[in-house]
Amino acid sequence: MPTLGDLAKLIRSKNAGPFELTFDIMFEDKENYERVKQSGRLSRELLAGLYGISVGDISLIEYDAANAIKVTIPRPCISGDIGDGDVFGGQQYGPLVEIEIP
Amino acid sequence: MRTGLSWDPDFIGCDAGTTDFGPYYLGSGESNFSVNALKRDIRLILLGARSRRIPAIIGSAGTAGADVHLERIVSLVFAIARDEGLHFRLAVIHSEQDKDYLVQKLHENRIKPLRNAPLLTEEVIHRSTHIVGMAGAEPFQEALDNGAEVIVAGRSSDTSIFAALPLQQGLPPAVVWQAAKILECGAACVRQRKYPDCLFVKMDPKGFSVEPPNPEYSCSPVSVASHNLYENANPYLLVEPSGILDTSGCRYEAINSRAVRVTGGRFTPAATYTIKLEGAELAGYQSIIIGGIRDSMILRQLDSWLNGMETALKDRFEAVFGPEISDRYTLYFRVYGRDGVMGRLEPQHHIGHEVGLVIEITADDQATASALAKSAGHLAVHYPIPEWNGLITSIAFPYSPSELERGPVYRFNMNHVVEPHTPGEMFKIEYFNV
Image 1 (cartoon, rainbow over the protein chains, first blue to last red):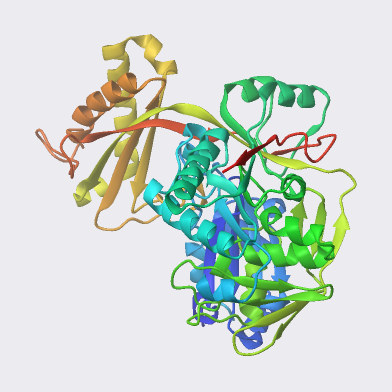
Image 2 (image 1 turned 120 degrees about the vertical axis):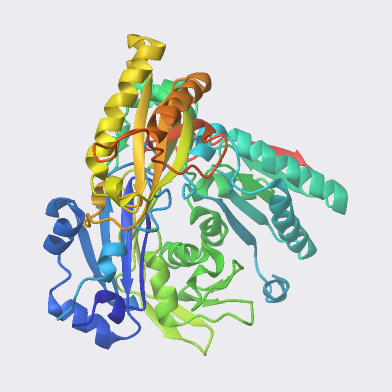
């Protein structure tokens, strides 16, 4: 079964301001984008389990113009505060890469 | 940039700041880039703009856009003008906020929290080292109205820098704000950006075209649309001080292999004009110890070993510095190879053949942080496990001394908007004939 990392052309994370983390999952073409969308696998419930946060805190938006899926969550720690490990929020997408897409 | 200038621009804009680099820059007043790097870029912008007699508009000067950052950039502008023999009318827009003004706004209930905002009180305002407001397009327009040929502004909304002049020329807000969003990161919207560079946008009443002047770069409809995703919680909605841009109806069409035309955005003016605040406060002074652990016997009980070490360190701190020390520091273990990158968000719990350990001690002054770190390092490096009988050295330190002083550390403490009476009241403008 291919992973999200196999199907996407880019998976990235970044701060959307110091208080939120945002993830972009971008696809080269409609085919892979639609495949992931139709699979229903990438859900707020799955992400809540993966990141240990509540479903209500997750925004998930399908952005057809760029063949992309966008996820935004609150930062558990403010960017650069004591205990934060990723000032840019740039390495928080790791667990997404291995999600298997049927 | 030379190619871009030959395409007859009406102005050059530059978004020079961000919160990306963390709270240190707003908190301390330092800039993220060296004076050499700042001077190189500002010189190119000033020479380019003056050669064509068009405005140069720089916003969010000096990384965080407080007055101290602004002064640094303005002094560079004067120095470059002197070196190059340039003459122009300069407007300096201040974004640093007066604390009494904000306290008054707080009492008037005209400061509102955004998502995931920390609690904002009068005390938070007073203990902030710097608070800035993100300027909208209006202060820039006021400066242009008053004949400014070069504008250097403190913290600004990324898009306002690029929206001010086209809005003033009467172009539709829907076109202008969408174009400004695409422009704000320069060449970030090209297919493959190898290094930072500039971007060229032509606006008209129906839409705009975007094309990178650098011949090595090209834009596609998808690469341009993708930029709406960048650093933004929602690619369809862009919130500006004066309204909201909705890109859900936008069309992105290739003009040729490297230029794209964008049409179909909608702009809804806000019922209430708002200015976003950014604030930072001192979180303490920090010393850290970096080390590594390779012994599989320790690694298989890493969590309990660290828990025991934490208790032992706290006991030692009290023994050395007295019981009152416990309110004056925080101790944090960061473990690379376990959850050093993701912390609470990390779903995996296995570790490999070695881990990296960062012991962070934050105290209310540097001397205390460093003294605690010295005690911590000595105790931690010999902290035992039951399986080995005898004195062990359990952490590999790469550096001597093992403790590093990090100096003051800061914390972002606001995610709020102010409702000013007028768009300009939070942004004082000074003019100079350079």
